[in-house]
Length: 70
Image 1 (spheres, rainbow, N blue to C red):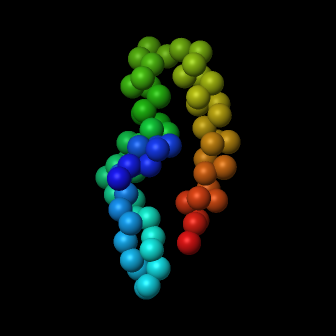
Image 2 (tube, rainbow, N blue to C red):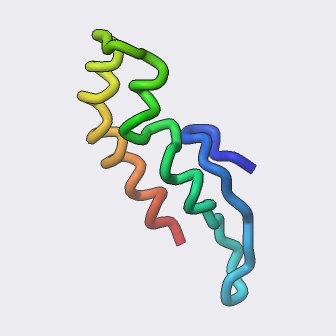
Image 3 (cartoon, rainbow, N blue to C red):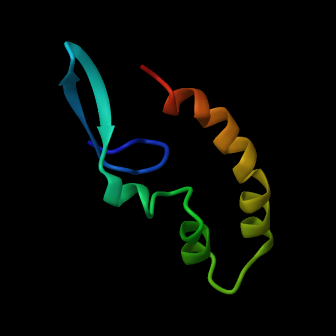
């Protein structure tokens, strides 16, 4: 399966009797919010790219609680 937000692949696995979502480390290198993804969508730069990059830290901050989900 793939995350609807970042497109990184993941699997549900049982770890110590609990179901966890385990992401594929390779897809975490080039997921939708990676450094290179916006540049690939907007070659040569654009104002949209500038807005995406400006908001990226806020997106990461909001997503952090889901990264720590247990």
